[in-house]
Image 1 (spheres, helix red, strand yellow):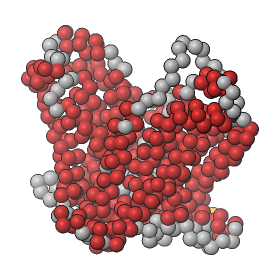
Image 2 (cartoon, rainbow, N blue to C red; image 1 turned 90 degrees about the horizontal axis):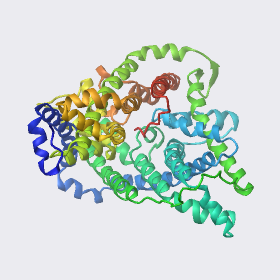
Image 3 (spheres, rainbow, N blue to C red; image 1 turned 30 degrees about the vertical axis):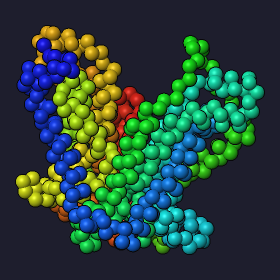
Image 4 (tube, helix red, strand yellow; image 1 turned 180 degrees about the horizontal axis):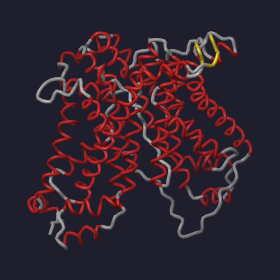
Length: 545
């Protein structure tokens, strides 16, 4: 029988060689594909190179710009997310429509918002030039600010919405009975109780903004950012050392925010003790708040709809900005890019399978057995959530471009990079599923002589069906729409759809790029629909780069 006591945790592996082998395999994979690339990036530049950063105006400008955009975009995206969360949770007019609009950006490729806004609001934009007769330059920080607000407010809306739903309406009624005015109720009761959700949402949005590559590379223009500097250095100058410095500098704030979110926010839970009273309905929102909030949500919803209208229209217009005649030529031309799209599907399937298998196995080992090294396994399984996609891409490029494990130039470099970058999602989903399974089931299996692997395969995997499906679906969607890692690891022989779209946009082939983007979007929505059918409930993917 397997030993459970922490003082005898080493006996578990000695008594179960199969479990020991799996543990060693998972730990080795995490060391090779998470720890080594991370250390390789950080150690690639010499100490003197890091010390020279303050003397380089370009680096200082990129750091300053990245932090400024983090503050601006986080503030607006979190505010808009709170607006939508409040409108949806309080059932304001149009709440169901707003809930749908808040979900749509989650399923778009990471560059789709920027690309669509270039089509709609740029100098040849349908809205700015054709309808309003304006000559607008959307490139630069104002355009990036708008794009990141629209792209990332849904994550804030999801988190804050869950907190607002959990607030007991009786607390608000009690404040009113004590004489508080409507505004004071929201200021002194609702907002303070929602602070954990607001703070967690702001931290998640801040990490996403800092790591945003897809939107920034299209619309930032000559506005240097750390997330884009790495690719420009490699693409234009083959400067691996400079790229390593850029992504290492980016790692400092993202890891700091990640640790703050995990260790500070999650340790502070605002609860309200109300006894066993019945749940009462929420009071209606006063008119002076209701209609301004409905107007604000409607305006942002229009901006979300424009994202989809832009790319769909772009795929059928002959020459955007000059010849508005409808055509199918771009879709016919997009057939030539069928190879990259198929490569995206292959990479997505293989990385999603590996992500799910390794993540669920790691969760089982850390949650169900007190093993030496379990904390290390847990840490390395979640730390990729703090790594920007560009950091992972540069890490694999530096680590696996030479023997003994020369993967760069093959599809496996991209597959494995995406596998371990998406690991935290599947790992956390599996941990949540394992927490709901009674430990007595495992103890009974052990008493009957079942090995650890037999228990895992015969008992836990069937019970973790929802976590497995959710992990696979979300990992696949993020893999086929990834750009931040793909730009560093693709080659002409293993081109993927997102990189093909970026090349088409850079070459001015907007119609073809729009058709490919729509095709990629339809693939993502199709997989989402399949996963939702299998799970019987909605899937909500996390930020993608």
